[in-house]
Image (tube, rainbow, N blue to C red; front, side, top):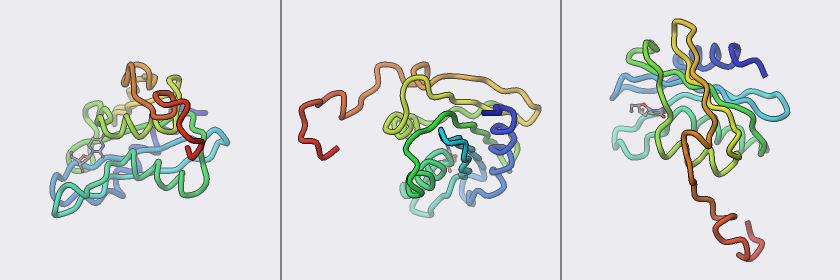
Length: 142
Ligand code: THU
C-alpha cells in the first residue's frame, strides 16, 4: 500500500465534502486488504447531529460494497478545503474503525505540504471496547 498515494487521495477527496455549516472540509482514503481504495468526505446536516465524518462515509461505502478487511486510512481536513494542520479522527470514527480493524490498522494524517503523521489504531484508541471480545459467549449472531 502506497502511503503517499493514499494521503494524496485524502487531500483530493476534501473537495467532495458537503460542509456548508462548518466550512471544514475533510477527506479520507481507505485502503482495503485487497488493494481497493474507497474515498469519503464529511456530509453535514442542518440538524447537526445527522452529520457524518469523512472517515465514516469511506468505511460505510466500503462495507456496503462487501469489504471487511482494511489496511489503512488517510485523513486530511481544514477550513475551505485546505489542510494546513494534521486532522486527527474524532472519537466516534476511531470506534467505527475498531469495529472492522485490529490494533495494527494504520491511520495516516496528511497535510497539504506533503507531511504525513503515521499512527496505529492501538495508539489512537488504546484499551478499546469491542462487543465480540467483551462478550465472547454471546450467541453467534455476530
Ligand atoms: N470531521 C470529520 O469529517 N472527521 C473527523 O474526524 C473530525 C471532524 C468533520 C465533521 C464536521 O463536518 C466537520 O469536520 C467539523 O467538525
